[in-house]
Amino acid sequence: MTLDELFLLIPQWILLAAAAALMLMEPFGRPAGRRRLGLVTVAAVAAAAYALQLQWGLEPRSIAGGMIRIDGFSLFFQWLFLVIAGLSAVLSTDFNQREGIDRGEYYALLLTACSGMSLAAMSEDLILTFIGIEILSLSTYILAGFKRRDIASNEASLKYFLLGSFATAILLYGIALVYGATGSTQYQAIRASAALQGEIPALLLPGLGLLLVGVGFKIGLVPFHSWVPDVYEGAPSPVTAFMAVGPKAAGIAALLRILAEALPGLAPDWTRILWLLAVLTMTLGNAAALVQSNVKRMLAYSAIAQAGYILVGVVVHTREGFTAALFYLVIYTVMSLVAFGVILALSGPGDRRVHLDDYAGLGRRAPYAAAAMGITLLALAGIPLTGGFMGKFFLFGSAVKAGFVGLAVIAVLNSVLSVFYYFRVLVYMYMKEAPGGTTDIDPVSRPVWAILAIGVLLILWLGVSPDRFLALAGYSSLGLK
Image (cartoon, helix red, strand yellow):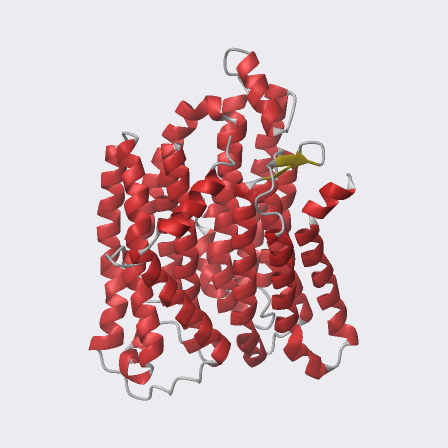
């Protein structure tokens, strides 16, 4: 690898070097220095973002023997992953100190997971994609169980690890079948081999199916979603916030690369499969969320449904559909981080105030937090003048233009169905009295308030002026060949 190619990977070196430094700060640093762990993490993310900015506008190119692609698509997702990691670190700082889990390895795992996600988005080789996904997976397995003295956290980690191991095996089997069918694991070579053979190799379709299972597990698609509600509920709230957006975005990035660059010749086949998965995912996710009384579990099923909406843009497999999917992914990231930010800010010692009854009367007890949660829930429901509405408008509109009218109608009906459980939280916050004996809300730190305020402003801004972010998503989707 040349020096020029090494320069293009500087953001990854920064993240990994910072992760190693955080691990060393734990045994050799003073106890008072632990308070600066989050600051070091944010500084590393900022440095990586600056290095990434220097690459903006460069000509797209492949490096490392064609295994890594540097283009608008990979830069877009790297930026998104850095934002997710940085905000997750800020949200984690006060929570971790309160819960006694403020340790260097926590933040090191966040940065390592971010590096794995970036690798999955840049990869143009199935083996490298697998490595990136596994780096992310191993980090999140540990993060989910980071509250080692909490039974629910341990159970969440173990369940995620066991099911994730099966998904990993299936993904590897799919890679093996694709290699057997085409003789390569590089996307462009797979594409060329399938085209040269004239007809679809016998092993390629089963390989595609197993790849969709492995990646679908990370995204949380039905029927590979069973881990999502239990893991989201049991994991520490900052980890839940990270998992709700990070692995999902990485899975979408990997899926788009594989389908659009390696297997476009199988579009008629994977379109039918993804159409069914999208319908099942959004329908089951919304239906299950209707009966949840735990807010974290409700948002977990909501996250499943949101994955179904994003999948609509992939099913369309047009430039407009891919652009709409990337745009909605940005909006969903903001909405999810704000929602889980409010949850962890109000969760109290032990991370226990996560039921609907705990939110009764919140509009009077914590008006600003209730307002942030309320606006976010309206956006998740797709109410006009919010970013959620504009994201769904472009997604469903791209489906209609491409002729997938039935899929768009099902998505709209599911969006209407979701209004019930989102508005139920609003009813509890503003129309119900707090039960007797309800404890006062703990003060929310200024950094968390800043994240919530900026997130709410972005949700409202994207609802009335989405042009810039939409143009950025369009430019980024041009990286897909």
